[in-house]
Image (cartoon, rainbow, N blue to C red; front, side, top):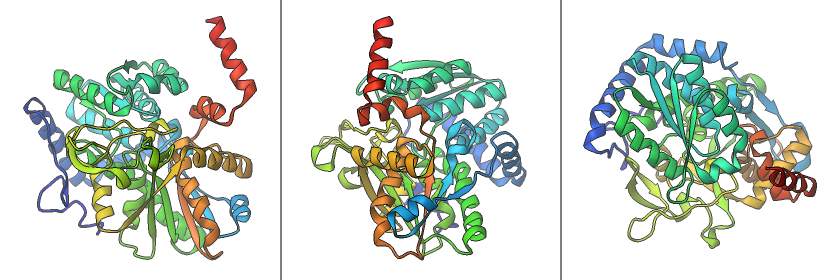
Length: 412
């Protein structure tokens, strides 16, 4: 299945999903990007150049850690995690942006723009722009700007202009809309660094290509560490770049179950969630066709998650296809479960996970005790959690932290 994944009759489609539904003004730029990526993809020296950049600048390969304490605490399967939190800028996002940065240099562009939710993609893009000498603008929903202030600070220090988007729900989907408008007005000099495996072709294929580094490393590392492949692999799913990057290398391994974990928010029954696979409908938005959370008239619904990087209305078309093929099982985790999972990992292993990644841990923690001890779980720890200090402190009701914030507000 892996070899055939990008070889459908219609380029850019994965079964009925994907495509490039863009206004005429963007068609030339999309065609230019598609051509540049296809040439790079066919050039073995490009992948080697990419690997060298990731090894020398981003400290890859990231390690896999055996979570002995957590495994013993749960009493079921042995649990390992892929440490993307140790990647440069603290998440898997650097894998994609450094690859796109190399493409930008090939195309001769001088400016990059990006959308961001949790801010990790924004920081990674700003870092890449600083490293490669590019002008950088980041669009971020105003709600996310407030709840991810540490990342906004670093983006600005790296030289990026951060624009808070106040339209709509002021979250990720609105940031994407604004980035698209910018791109339509500046495409001659600007490249849009899409942060996930969504959007019009070639973005889903291109981002998956760069993020596949995660799964390729993990495949070899698990064999070396354990002598076999994991029985179950968990990854959180917003747009789906960390999950796709992890899963692709294991698609042909039928004995490896792949589990994507969406944002259950305050519970599916409340309507305040971001579970596209349980509440979504097939539709077209933001340049591609996939499952979206939308009403009967096709209007996009509001989403909710304690994790800013997962409250997106759509999901990558590759994941939609693999879901239909029953190759991926989708689960969800509520905000409450996620915070508890983060607390458990912090206390048991001394690892501070991003709230996004904690969704994968929440599902694994729920299911691991029912598995036999010889079974092996691998979780993609897609990012570190220092960016979430405000949200976690609020969620657990830390009185000292709340007092500190009140004092800060009074001093403004």
